[in-house]
Amino acid sequence: MQKALEFLAEKDETLRFIIDNFGHPHIQKREEGFAALCHIILEQQVSVASAKACYVKLQNYFGEINPTHIYRASDETLRGFGVSRQKIIYLKHLAEKVLNGELVFESFANKSEAEIREELLKLKGVGHWTVEVYLMFCLQALDIIPLGDIAIRNTIKELYDIHTEAEMILLTEDWKPYRTLASYILWHYYLKKRNKI
Image 1 (tube, helix red, strand yellow):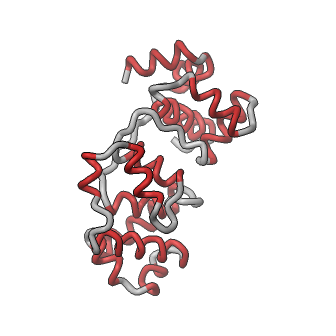
Image 2 (cartoon, helix red, strand yellow; image 1 turned 120 degrees about the vertical axis):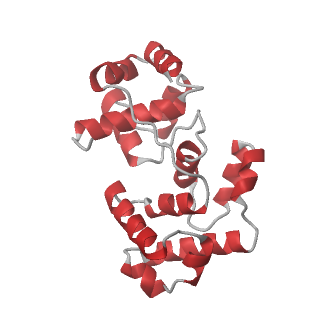
């Protein structure tokens, strides 16, 4: 990671400022597979704390969050743990795809990022942000910048005074091949500034 931090600090003085003044970012590593993708779906458009609370309730109830448990659970049960009606549809659809063999997480080891992205985007309720977070947290992909993430976008707007996606894409070209680490640096700044870590 040190080599990548040095590369980014040399390429971008704003990233260097964050590293020097706020320290190194925490790199997330999550298990791969069904439960991890469920967790990321729960995180869509809600606070991290709210999604985690919901996920922990599901874990405590089921013991293990697996496709069979989610598929067989009643909507009422899932609603009781704070899962929205829309996300119940997404989780059950995901469970069904795994149970019928259409989605095999173990096969990802032999697939490119582009192939994984294409496969996951076919799922109901899974967009680019969800796929990018899965690639970053679960598969440790090195060159992902989730511009659909509100914290990333707001931090770029604040620090670089750029506001369009086209400008953001152009900015982040300089961070290749370590855009994932740059994303963690931006998240780290965002959370530190708001006293959330």
